[in-house]
Amino acid sequence: MNPSFKFFHIIFFFINILIAQDFSKIDKDLSELNFDKTLITLEELNNSHPNNEDILLRLSITHHYLSEQSIEKKEDKENAQKAYKYIVQAYNLNSEDPNILKWYVIALGKTVEEESIRRQIEQSKNIENLSLKVIAMMPDDEFCYNIMGQWHYKLASLGKASRRIASILFSEPPQGSFEQAMYFLGKSLELNADYIGTYYWLGKVHLKLGNKQKAYELFNKGILLDRPFKREEKLFQDMNKIIERNN
Image (cartoon, rainbow, N blue to C red; front, side, top):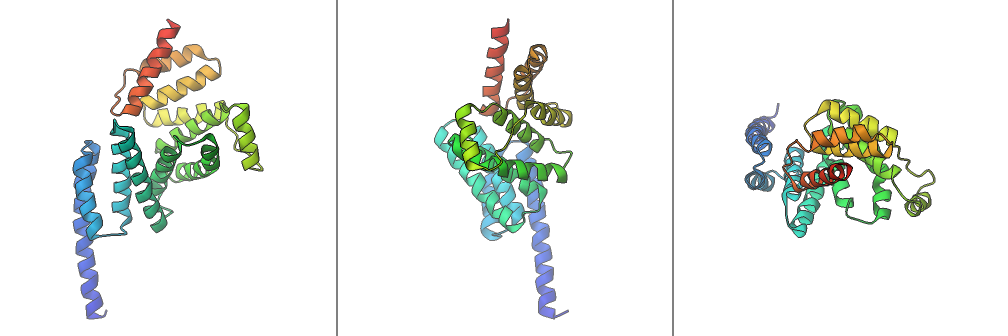
């Protein structure tokens, strides 16, 4: 081995060890919801080690959760856009990493959820294809099962005008199914029984299918779960309203 190349290889090895040590602390802070603290460390790492897919992935995750945590709509949107920007950079470096693909789907879905129905329909096939790819690569991860459940529910719930838009945009418009929504959300629930959102969406599916008793059972379980961010708080409020209307 060329001496200079060997020296570079050793230096690169030690840099990777240092980054890996930082990641263990970052991941611990992420799990403890210390997002502001995590962001400072990640930004420093990104400045010293640009184009590192692991750093970019964690920057995207951090900004996603800062978005979910934000009270102000402007701050929410800014963090969502940053989450998408960083995951696109990571995706461009490694489009086959299942975790990068998963967070790409999550960031993409969040950026389009406030946009027009046309824009949401335009991205629907991309979200479907990527979600199914992640499920095939990580069959024990609940995230994309949940996303596909919501995908089927929302498409199956489209009105006539939105369906016309879909038929204009695609020769074969994306088709949603409440039965498929139930399957995917059921799988997500099997893998993680502690997320309030799964109970909400699965309950909504059962209402659509006329299974009211099952829906209310799910809602009553869901409202007992943690709701760390405003999205979950909204689901909690919606489930409570549905339960109150039924009493």
